[in-house]
Image (cartoon, rainbow, N blue to C red; front, side, top):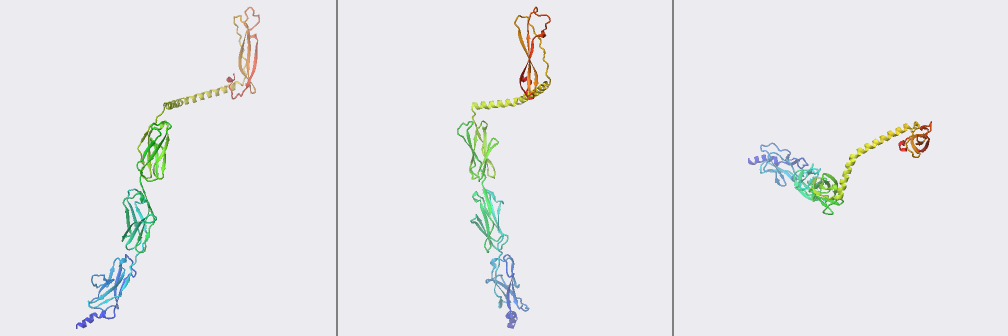
Length: 430
């Protein structure tokens, strides 16, 4: 009776029944889900006792015990899940059936689109700031190994492996010597993929410059050459230096490789005062302390300066007055010329001269009277001269019928010169 019951129970497995392990998907990709299914062929007959299943990988059971479900599910398969799989089906512990072994290879997605990002962005940092290098991939599965390199020769800085598409590398406080090109790489078993080069520039702000005056003598006088030297002890080149006298800029000079610069100044009496300089390399400009400069001016130079000032003051006052007087003289000459032009149009008649008598026995005296009558002939000017002989007879000797107007007189014409009537004044001719 017992044997008969046992045969009935074992009949489904004692027959020519085959077990098959089915993998879904047939080509599993790392990161996805993989399902293992154990099937019988042909399907077993209905029995009151159900079949129990168990799955194995490389000789190790995947579950803690038999399960009535013919499936085993791996939610996220990894590269390490590759291996040899099979399944087992049985009703009792007496009899069991095994499937054929199936070799499963879990495939990874290769790395793609590797890039390097920096924080802060832009790649320009000040010495002492923190630099973060972020290596990113957009494709790739499984554990990814990240590498960071410096320079075109690929100096290795850091290596990090993690199950992520992103990894970071930090430099807590950068130095000026950290200025270089950087790149990263990522690998998940198919070989490394590299990012593009990213340039990092680290600059040192300029320190407060020092202004030094280099003079040929302790006592400075007008004409001395003074060298103004400005230098910042720290600061990334190039550095631009600017020199100032009081608040006025004197000039600037650049130090392309660092260090200081000089500015030569030829002293004058006005160069006394305060001097300072400024240094700037594109970060924050720094200004030096003020340095006073005193110039000794000789007494003769002071007198010259005073005289020059007085002359300038007098000229400033007299210049408008002089211009006004010159204008009045020009206007007067202009009016005089116009009057002379009107006078030459008519020849005046000679003016009779009166005789003069003296109660004296002195010999006869001759008097000459001159008159400019402006006689014009062509472009020649004539002058008319009257000669009048004046006598002084006594009253007894004066014959009857005589008249003072009958005295001897004659006119003398004299050609003076050629003249341009439009350019000369007649008063000037006389």
